[in-house]
Image 1 (cartoon, each protein chain N blue to C red):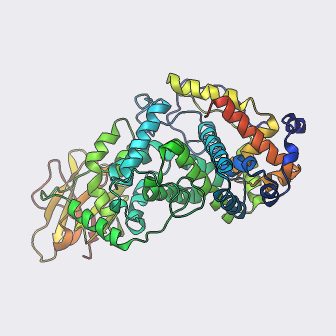
Image 2: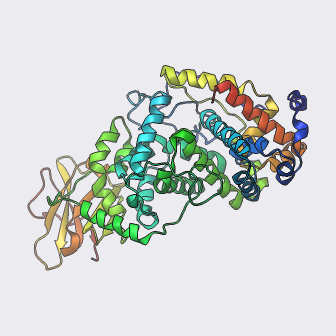
Image 3: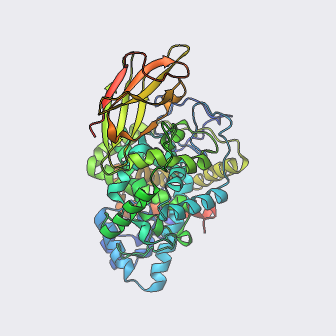
Length: 295
Length: 233
């Protein structure tokens, strides 16, 4: 119905068939909207970047302003929302160590460096730069180690960033600030291993194990609530054959949240039993799940 | 082809949206808000006005640039529905969408220091990264024919999703609907095919059986109308 519309601005004739033609005929600025919309091929994008980088200042600024405005309009207009899988944040966090370039080296990190190292066009954050700065990565690692769990052995600190996010709710932000660390410390560990064991009665327990953090994160999935008056109790079974050491209790509510078990270096495995509410000093029941820690 | 159909607005968000009743094609005009927990209906409907949200996201990005994990977690919490929603819409495939979302947030973690508030809002910065990623991935993983077919299938019936009760978001949503209305249908169609279909202008032209310069003009003029109407400066 509306090829007429193109005529309205009297500008439809300005475009050629290819981006190269548009650039050659002095219509680079008119490509700003196509560029902002990612409606050009990667090669065309590069050609535009290259052209704009060396274009006269007025032309470059006009182009960048139109790109910025278009992106702003697009972000406001197209708002599809969908809840990502509950464990996606954990998976992202687990990937951070290997990929961090080490912002540690720039403590004033908020400083804009948009034109920086990658493209000729001073646009924001378009390119992933794979971690290259070993020294900085080392610094981060040292800092992580310093930040590690404090002296108090917080057995079974439940609830972590990921779970809080999965459960959503209001005011989680402030809460996270305090609680995010224990699980993240493990999830971000370079030597992270995952293991999964079935739980008698249904469901399974998944362990994220890090020897370097001397800790494991235990997540139960599909595990039924303990019978009335009972709780799940977690134990570290020491390598030296001494008595199991209680790591804390999980009631029905705690089941849905990851739990951190620390001090795993001296343990051969992690066991879970069903005990009377309040827990037991030593396991009174056979384990419903046992996971080797292999540390 | 009806590209945008303003469906009846629902008074409240449906608490349990599933993949079936909420396909990735939902056009959701809600402002960003904290992810809704299934059991936090109602109480979670606190929505920041855009300016406050922008400010908050800027502060969080500054924190992320310093390696602050809590800031990263909150940033994710506030924005992941938008990133994943767009990825799903462009890529359709859930796994590819998860991969893309993952890559986007890794990029946020790595490049937060490069965010320049002078050069745009945090959300625009994030969605630019997200769209680029999604489009790159869709182009490398699917032929344009596939994309068009899927796009067609996913956009047959686009309703506006529930609109938040919060006055600011409602006004914003209304502004967006009104401003989209200032585009011609063919302009809307071309912009949408490019944005959600991940098509290049050339692919849009082929798909619509129109001349390439015509499609370029439609996209340019459509976006200019949109931003002018929205008062983006």
